[in-house]
Amino acid sequence: MRDNVPYEPISFDKALKEALKNPEFKKGYDELELEFSIIEQIIKRRLEKGLTQKQLAEKVGTKQSAIARLESGNSNPSVAFLDKIAKALESKLQISL
Image (cartoon, rainbow, N blue to C red; front, side, top):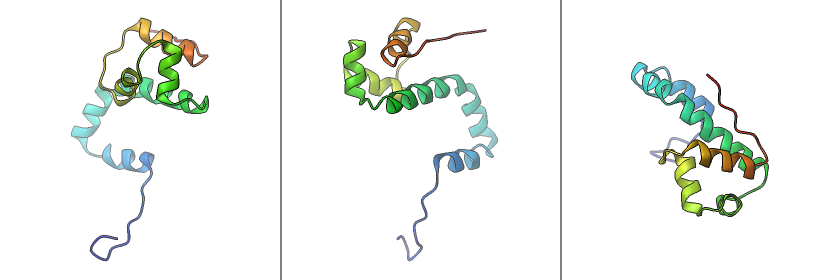
C-alpha cells in the first residue's frame, strides 16, 4: 500500500495497451516491433521448454549473459546466432520479406 491506496497489479498487456495510447510511445514501439516480437518468442519458447537462461546458453554454446542481453534487447544478434537459439529450442528460424 502506498499513501493508503491499495496496490493493484496490472498485467503487461493492459499496461502496454495503455502506453500505446501515447503517440510518441507508439511510434517508438512500432519501430522496435520486430525486435520485441523475436524476444517475446524466444522467452516464451524457452519457458515452455522449462529452460533457464543458463541451460539455454549451454545448449547454444554461449554464456548466460549473452542470453540475458538477447532477452533484454541489449544485443544485436546475428542470424546465425538466432538460428542456434531456434535449434536449441527445437524450433525453426524463419525469415520472410
